[in-house]
Image 1: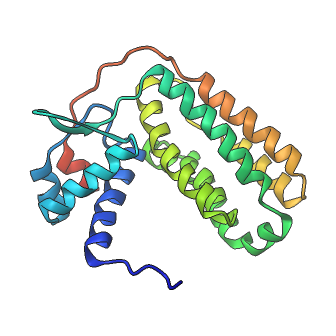
Image 2 (image 1 turned 90 degrees about the horizontal axis):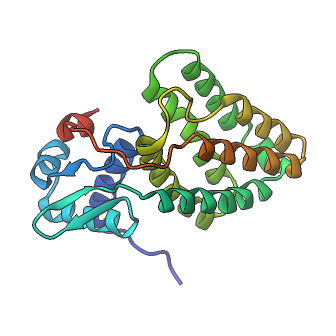
Length: 230
C-alpha cells in the first residue's frame, strides 16, 4: 500500500491547528479565550472553511470547545480532567522512556544536547514564555526520538491539554517544570538505566501535578490576534 497523499487543504488545516496549538501550549491563549473565526482568518491569512475545519479538529482533541450561539473557545479543563491528563501522561511517558535505548541516545546525541543547552539558557533568564516552551519541548523531544509515532502523537495532545491545566490551576510561585530533573532522565537513558529514568520521570510528573491548585479559576481577557501573531 502506498503512502497517503496529503492535499493542499489538509496541509493548510494542519498549519492552522499547529499555530493554535503553539499559542495555547505557550500560554498565549489561556483557557476560556474566545476563538473568533474572523480574527484567525485575518491573522493567519487563512480560508474561513479551513479555520472551521481546524477548530473542529481541535474540539475532537478536547483542546477547544464549540458551543451553539457562542462559537469556539479554548477549553477549560475540570479538576477531574486535570487529574486524568496527568494520569495518562504518567502511562504514556513511562512507555516512551522505556522504549529509548542507549543506541537511540547516541544517534540523537546532538539533538538532545542542543535542546538541553536551550533549556538551560531559558531557565537562566526570566522570560516565562521561553521557559515554558523549552521545558515542555523536553517531553515532546523524548516522544519524537522514541521511534513510536503513536506514543508521540498521543503525548503531543496531552502536552497541549497540560498547558491549559497549568494555566488554570498552577500556583504562580512555583516553576512549571524542573530542568535538573530533565538532566537526570537524560543521564540515566545515556547510561542504559531505563528503570531509573522511568522512576525520575514518574516522580517529576507527580511533582508537577502536586503543584496544581485544583479549584475553579476565572479566565482573563486576551488578544487573539496578538497571540497568534507572535
